[in-house]
Image (tube, rainbow, N blue to C red):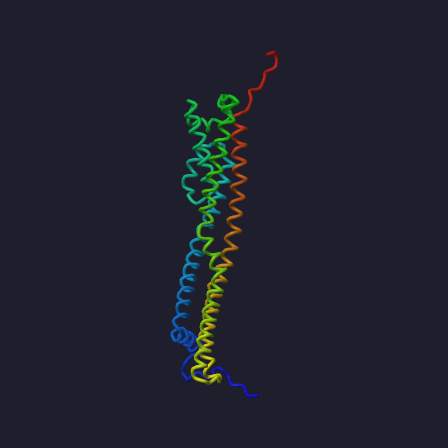
Length: 267
């Protein structure tokens, strides 16, 4: 069996990688109209996927960093107004936005009750027992609804464009396979017209068709990897929001709805 080195097939003076890249480009240019159309679709999928990966990675990383900063401030500081002012600069933190939604609902409720709109910062004072039980329940229901709505909004924001990655990962290989099948069909049709089935007739058409499958995999693999990675990051932030919502409601109950203690000797 005689083996012929691939480099021996390349003209002298042309680097191997340059010749290989040139062959791929030539195969794409000489492919049939349907294969070219499939390649154009896959090119769009690939470019969009990488744009989403770049933007989503920056956004989720910044959201994670800002969330860590906010939680550190929230659990260490007792000045709620200071936390509210600081959270204004944490635009990408879903937990900070959750806090702002809860704070806004609490402030709105106090205005409706005729109390001090800034009373949330006066924890541990007279604000603890000024609400009757019915008003307390109404406030807690309103806070839960406000936090739930904010969580839904933040989940939508965090998951935005992830569906495109999932679609690309699921459909790109089949789109590439469709281009390959179409190209092979065209090759066999050419064989029938020429009445010859030697390698020189079959190989060019099949190699051009297989480029579509390779392009489909090249678009799908990064999309699947990125989708799984970003999904884990979103799940982590969603868990942080669930924990914070529970802690926020507990803080409101603990600081503002305590029953006044009964002093000894008053009975």
